[in-house]
Image (cartoon, rainbow, N blue to C red):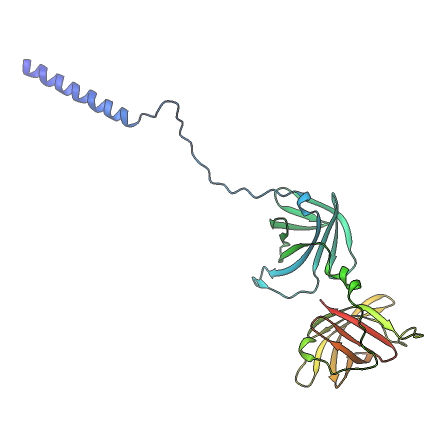
Length: 267
């Protein structure tokens, strides 16, 4: 009988020990709470005040091709008022409108919508759904310096053979000069810009000429032939011949001796 008693007592003590050990393994220190850490990424919040000033596009990437592309319609943004902006493509007329940021990173500019990818003191990256545009903060836009370009003082009575290797690109006319007493170039339409593709070994290139008309401007495909010191432009009904006075990386001067001369800058 005593053996049975001691056996039951041993079994009871063993059960109590196991229970205490199991409970001890689950004990949480007093005052400490278990917390589940959530790993969520919060989009940055931007303020319109960060955009104050002038921003000019310098790089553009196609979302479809995923690589940089060439462009001439440079996006320029001028945040000159608290909630206002002037938007300009290339050197076209500026469009003024309201500017706003919808949290966290949607940028509204005169009716157009962009997503801000990044923004700091001097760099802005925005996405319009088709392109990623990279802009830098500027004291002045490039076209604002055109009027300050040093006046071409070479003898306009002397034409030169062009350097064809520097002529490929779009040339925007920033100044016209006429000889004293000259009013206008007959019935010729005035040139606003000239796009020249790379000339071949014979000095022939295709391109596009933008002309001022009574209705505004028109773009016309053209063929451009460089013959000795002259340039011939075949643009449908317009047949234009000019002497060449200067060709450089950023300057192209052409026109007629004793007549109208065009000063153009590469965009």
